[in-house]
Length: 222
Image 1: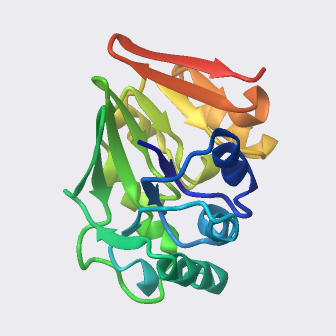
Image 2: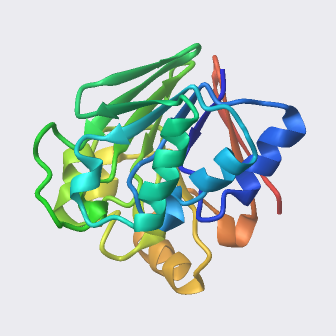
């Protein structure tokens, strides 16, 4: 079973990974329809990588989204991919666990708002460990997704408007994962993470987390 969460802007890394291993996607989760998270859908379509089902946050198209992503999503739909909208409380069942949607709530999205405010937040339960994935959720909205977890993927690439000290205290992770290419944001997260260990892609390169029955392990490129 193969599932991807977001594609990146050009989808190059994802499509290359899938092609090399001859993997098709049983599920694709798009946390929100901003280009830096979802425009790579076009590359999946162009590469003819099958995607059985695509999950979107409830009312995803009501927010301010990127037109190129909407076009790519229509391309994906035309290939036969099932589009499924999910909201708080819905679950995506995996062979070794599940993903529970924590945000957004059904019918809460207001038209023409920043899509980051309704970015899908997921609690992954894998082999008994948990990981909180927060997309680009920020501001007061992030507290709707403040569930305790072993691993936390920092929201919005470590932006100062997300992953507040109060949020970190509520989640109380054993590991903080930061996907970031900005030294400024990396330094900002360093200043507020306290004593929580952090894996930072800007410093460590690609980060792999292996979830196993007795816990999880972390591998970095450097």
